[in-house]
Length: 113
Length: 115
Image 1 (cartoon, chains in turn red, cyan):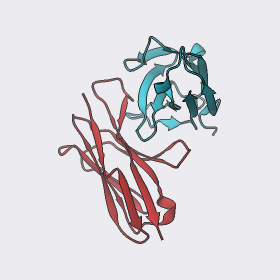
Image 2 (cartoon, one colour):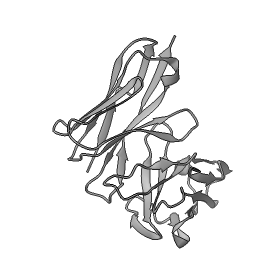
Image 3 (spheres, chains in turn blue, brown):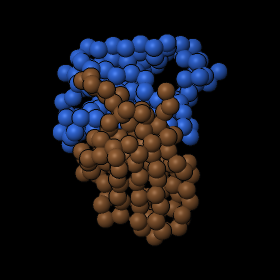
């Protein structure tokens, strides 16, 4: 059974600082997604990582995937308040149908001035 | 391009009552998903449709939950009878295209409170 673990679950950081969110998963997969969710809102797709060594960047966020270690990271550079949200990673479950995503519990990020 | 539409946005019912949610996916998207998101957790897939056929409903509590997707477009999810533990946000998502991956686009969700 595929399990997805994120850490930390809560992250409070100051503006201008850097930090990394980690996403570990338990069985083989090479499709990993990162989503953002603002309070009371739905999920917004951030990145799709499709192969070992994949790296994607958008603004202050950079995501990477190491399929051998079964690990993805979401790195935040010089955080700003607008990045405050909950970030989910989701791994495609090869034991299920295509598109069968298993989500982590999410990392609630709070960026303080 | 219009996004995934869901209604109602909020619903409050008493336990043992019935409730139904509606979803209209992005035009042309063949795959539709229903997720349950309990407060403080990530979404959990309930059911996946490809056109109007069920691809995966292994996590759908079939004694009380049902879903259909008539004509391969809109979908409804029903709970009958509701339990307290069904309080959650029900998210609909859709995906399409012919690539080797399909990003899922989520609707705004229906927030259900069972009293």
